[in-house]
Image 1 (tube, rainbow, N blue to C red):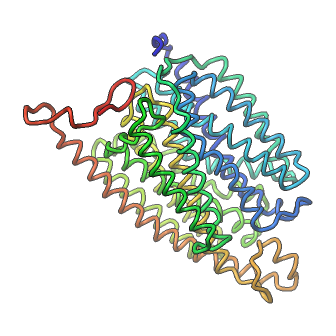
Image 2 (cartoon, rainbow, N blue to C red):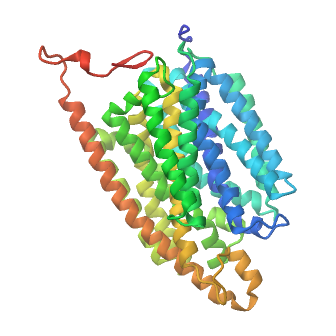
Image 3 (cartoon, helix red, strand yellow):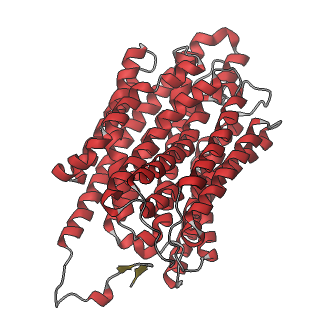
Length: 509
């Protein structure tokens, strides 16, 4: 490993933190913003089918989630700053290609390219912070970064609403591209280079990990469209299981694995990964349905829809600064239990108010924001501190992958429920709301009412699943905390040689 960089001044540390947070918001916000573009895209000259529309939303997420761990590893080995700059450039190119796409297939290509850029960006923003911020300020910086990532979804709704208020879906992509270029310039100027890992890359491990993630997410995404018992979906899940098992076997034998399977012997890492995935399951299930509910059911414009998420942002801006204090006083398990319970309550309230007044809808969003505020910082700090700094990029990739997997799962589950429950007068063929309104113009009120009821059911189920997710996360966290507290410090009866241990280069056994 190369020598460590000279410590930065506090002012430059803050500038680096601000830039990395902005890049995180851009990448995560773009996941949410595209949902606002669903109605105008459905009615556009591209004429996407319901399945193609879902892929326009998910192509970015699939590529992002599948490449994010290898992208973090590449940053660790070849330079986090250089990989981050490359990612921002690719992100801008993909956004421009999407903006000028003449067909659905070109649009999908642009979304996939943007996903490659996002995969290179997000894990390396966290890795840059781990190495650029002094140890005494690192936990606060990581918690701030995590909060901004959680806030990114809400910011994406507002920014997307502002961009789409011009009446053309292309404006969303034309706004994103220059933002990526501006961040590229700031990153090039203020971000320091950090020490690199000398471990070689693991092409076989990277291929297996990527393929396992691809097949898993493809199964999740195709579930709503093909049916969860369809041969395609079952085949994807079976292939994923085989690939994951092969990845574990190969990783246990490799001298320098991309992501050492033995890392998952660390209880807190397991607990934080599961918690992160489940938290974003509920979060992005909400974002998927929010844009359509406000536009179709409440009659909001695209700009009003973007601003309509504001009640959720308020707690996310205020509460995260108190999270370290809450964790120190009550412990991480009670804080996470509170977070998941409140998010579940907020989603249930929202399910009761999909077609009532916006005031009740806004109150539900505010409650969800209160629950989301402590979850992201606490989980991210625990995950980051479970890994050595030499694997900061891989850690960032793991954090991002679990988030995106949870996001894809949330969208797939609520999408399945809505597709099943959305009854269109006179037809049994699944359609988007936009398609139904065009093909059945005389049934406007019935179509909107049916969609509101389907969304209510989807949110109610998501609420229940979020509560179950909270129980699972808290149970795992209590187990991890108990294991950490009971771990022997030094005992003549402890067989240290048989236990996995952390080194500067990773985990050894």
